[in-house]
Image 1 (tube, rainbow, N blue to C red):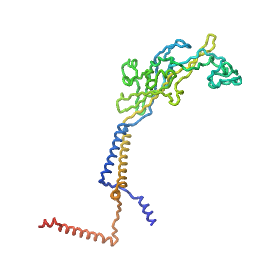
Image 2: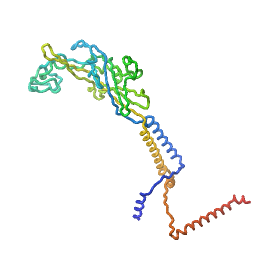
Image 3: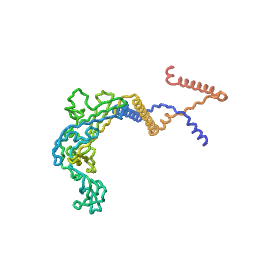
Image 4: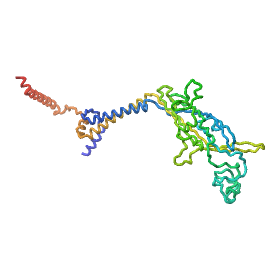
Length: 418
C-alpha cells in the first residue's frame, strides 16, 4: 500500500495542470475582484505613469560646474587697523570664486607681532606653571603659541615662550565690524549637463537684454531665474538673522536642484534653490559659528620681519548641485505595464483563495474548479471490450425509445392528439 502511495506521488509530478474557467455567481468575491482591479489601475496610471513618470528613462549622474563672484564694499575704522576699505579681494576667500567660499563679516587683529620671548596665555592649560621645572626648555606648548624657554613667570603663572609676540588677543567680539556685508551680492553661475541625453544648460536666464543681470536680484516670485543673491536675504531664507550670524560666523548650504522633464520644452528645465544653516547643533550651541586665522608678513626699515595676525569670523557657503532628468523610452514603459498585469494576476490568486478556502460553499467551488481527466483507449483484443460497444449501443437505443414513449404519453401530447 505504501509503495503504491509513493508511486502515485512520484507520477503526479509529471501531471500537467491546465486552467479551467469557472464563472462563480458570488457577488462578494466579484466586488472584491473589481475593487482590486480598480486599485491596480489607479496605481499604474496615477502613481507610476502620471506622478512618477514610469514611461521615462532616468539619469541622476549630473555633471556640474559652479563659478561665484562677490561684489560690494564696506568701510571699517578700528583701533588696531584704523580706517580700511574692504573690497571683494579682501573679504572673499578664495577670491577667484569656487563652489565653497568664505565671506568675512567680523575680525580681531593682533598687529606688529615679532619673534621674541613673552608669557604664554593663561587660557592655555599646558602653559600653566608653578616653578621652572614645569617649563621644560625646548618643549612645545600644546595648543599654545610657541616653544617653552625653561622659565616660569610668576607675574602671570605661565611659562615664558619663544614665538610671535605679543600673543594673540583672547576675547569674543562684541559687535560685527562688517555689518554692511548684508548688502554684498553673490553671483552664482551654474552649468549642468546630463551626458546620457546630451543635454546642457545654465542657471543664467537666456535673454538678449544685456542689462538684465546688472539690475536683477533673486526673488522667488519676481525673479526666480536671476542668479544674483543679496547676502542678507540669503541668510534670512535659512530662518536666521544675518546680524547674529555675522558676529560669530556660521555655515550656510545652498542647494541647487535640477529636476528636468526632457519630454517638455527646453525652457521648462530650470533650477530650484533652497537654503539651510549647517553649523547649528540643537544639543550644543558651542559648536555654532565659524572662524579661522591668517597672517600677513612685512619687513621694517631694518629688514626685520613682523606680521599682523587676523582672526576672521564669517559665513562659509557650500553650494551643492543635485539633479535628475527623464525622457520617454519604450523599455521602462513596457516593464511597468508588465508589472501592472502581474499585479492583476495577483488579484486573481487572492480572489481564488477567498472563494476556494474562505467561503461557506468552498467545497462546492473546489469541486467545480479542479477536475481530473484521464483518457483510456479501448482494447479491441479483449473479447469483453469488443462486445461492450454493442451492448452500449443497445442500451442507448433502448433509452431513446423509452424517452420517446414518455414524451408521447405526456399530458400536453394527449391533449394535442384529441
